[in-house]
Amino acid sequence: MEAWRTVLRTGFLPFMPTKGLLAVQRALASDDPRLVQKATTIPLPMQYVMEWPVEGADFISFVYWQGCETDGSVGSIERAFASACYNADQALGEPASCHWFLNYWDEAEDRHALFSGMLDEVNQELVRRSHPDDDDDQEDEDDSDIGCPVAVECK
Image 1 (cartoon, rainbow, N blue to C red):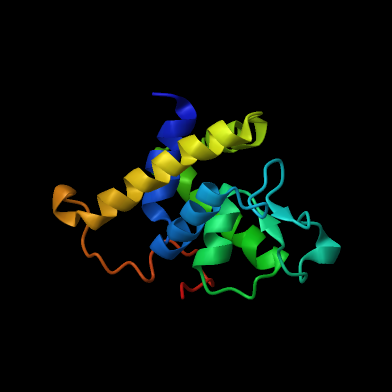
Image 2: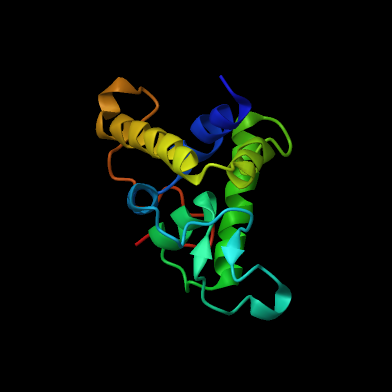
């Protein structure tokens, strides 16, 4: 299996809020222009725009922007992104392992193929969650508070 896919399946998807996955599923299926490559957020996360509202986000940031209760600012989504990356690295037991997925997302040239492949991955994760008996580690179908980093609450 490709490294990016292992990182996505093991380090990111299991810890993301269902509401955010449903939002990114819709965005991928509709080629939502707010789902961007080569940037964590739009506007870019620079000090002077941290309080500005997010207008677009990459895959990881989009999930938290649309799936967690935040103020919608660049700063809050940037913190959620950093926390998700840290948690992915911890889950995989390798520092900076999240870069395999992040580079794959940013460097993909065929947006349609990228979105199609990501939609398949998101769909598989949502199916897995809808069948908790198939996964002994899955405790409860109510995941309203899982996946949102500290100081970011899910809706």
